[in-house]
Image 1 (cartoon, one colour):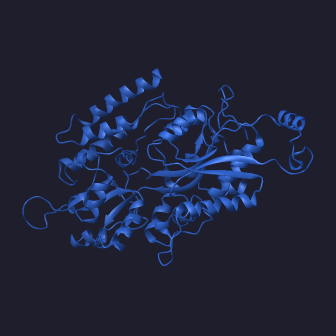
Image 2 (cartoon, one colour):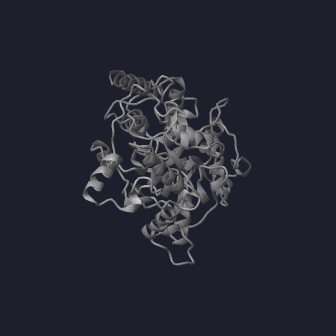
Image 3 (cartoon, rainbow, N blue to C red):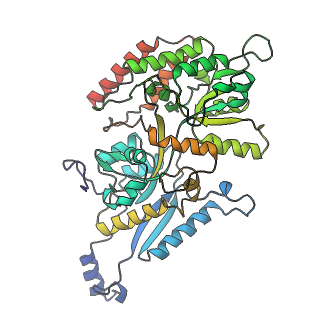
Length: 464
């Protein structure tokens, strides 16, 4: 496997400042009479390698997800024990375990800008991932993946972790968007025989028909109390709305890296979203709702269907245990699509990455840690619920099993095929698009908004 996808790209030497080269060290220490026998050339004992790992608070077995009948182990303590176990297995590797707060990602950006990134860290394939890969800031993992790995890891996960023909991240977990439905509302409206099943292949025509039937005024006071569809456009989670466009056949980027959402399939999808609002099938005020607002409306049984991540399962179970919501019959089902279009979900992949290393021994050590972190023992929580490997047991929860079956037909449709210009943030124009398109009244017609957006973004891409 080739290690550098583009031999013409400059490979800056980045990372924590390294010790002097081995020969220089031996000469200097021997001259001073300070060279211990264990470090002497030819002693047969490998030199100790120290690597820095930035962990996240959710890695492994977070306390809130441990056995509720046992005393929870603080996550920091649990993680330290896993690293201790790794060091016992690899006695020549010492891991400096530090906590990365995550959040906005400023800490890792500053570290890369200062040329002192951690050796091993968590991340997700996004625009920055593409930039870091293109600039040679990350180590490709191709030569460390065995044939068994490649057969075991979902192809969609490996594809999402790839750039320009090489794979740059170890998949830690993956999950796909699903449609969440309130089956009790279906039955209340006499739609029992039309409830989408766990492997449903349904169309947007059926989806709109159900949305209309599930919008009703329960207390006969005039306006609807329940809406067929919930949509939110206030936050940066535009992937939910974009998934509707993609399942009309749209692409965010074409194969040449041109922004293409304004092509005919994208216009058709955005027009449908606008129609849901204009004809009263969707919650009014979508531009004022964020993800958590829509989740609340759903558990209050004011929305019959909406797109969500699998995170709602964990949240809802936790809220039910705390008696903050009343349990009801709800389920995850596949996304609908336009007649003749193969349905596709958005794939989120959490990963472990290795920053560029200066020698093979350090690279091998970092890759050994990354493989360990993403394995079944220290990755117990995600291994049970959203493992990127086919060899892991299927989730016992029926809804999680539905979500995992969507992985095979999922992809990160927001991931650009090439590096975007520095400081260009696609999330901002995407959020503006949905704010303008779904406001009441809309700022402009869907085709006009998309045409303008296409023109402006492609001008930026060509100038960059």
